[in-house]
Image (cartoon, rainbow, N blue to C red; front, side):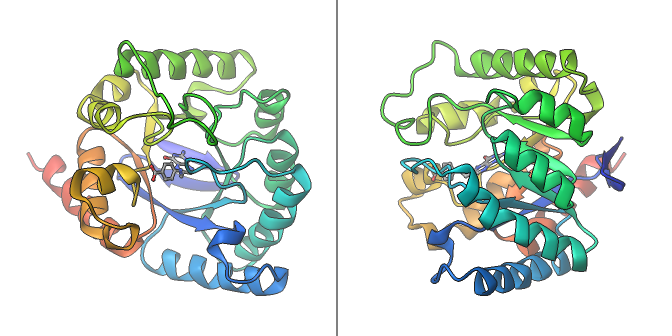
Length: 276
Ligand code: PT1
């Protein structure tokens, strides 16, 4: 299966690695725009050399506790980076945003994939994404980043996450986005306890069997900290392990910080899966 990302094609029969490029101020020592853009481009270059098929560019931090940002702030952060990456690197650019204005400007600037942690629920987002004509990733989140880890609650997390995503996929299709252009993501760490996250990974095939491509983002997340009691800068091996498990369980795309190690690991995973 091929995914047409604004003229760049991704082969979904092999696991793909999406490299994370944060352009939020907490990922840069200085807010200087040119400096930030230059640093971001270097990081993107390295991830492409390491085998990333996509680069995910986001200007809104959505990790637990993060505060909202304005449309203008997000545009100022992501658009120059998208333009710079598109000018130099032959990679699919994903924009990590929920705002219709940012989706529109990002696709005009060269983004070929929309990654929305709010699954296009913002007013106007669905229509803008449909008009953009590029694939979309719909993610599940309970609550909003600021308070989502306070009291996550589900009767059946696996069923509820799947049903939410299938309802959003149906809304996308009603708005004119074809089935093949829709990717689903259970949203690890977004309004979930450690047990919820582990259950979602253990039962990922239930989501994968719904017939849409699946994306998983587990890299360096706090569930690793909770299980292994490791700080964020010592989570490489467990992040790679979780990426392999996600691919083994049916994910087509993994969103990661450590591209080189993850590419090697998921290629081995694919080799085992492919042998007859
Ligand atoms: C994700 C994802 C994302 N994660 C998609 N987009 C983040 N499609 C941003 C923690 O528990 O999984 N899928 N965009 C980052 N968000 C988090 C959430 C980072 C939780 C860290 C944690 O540590």
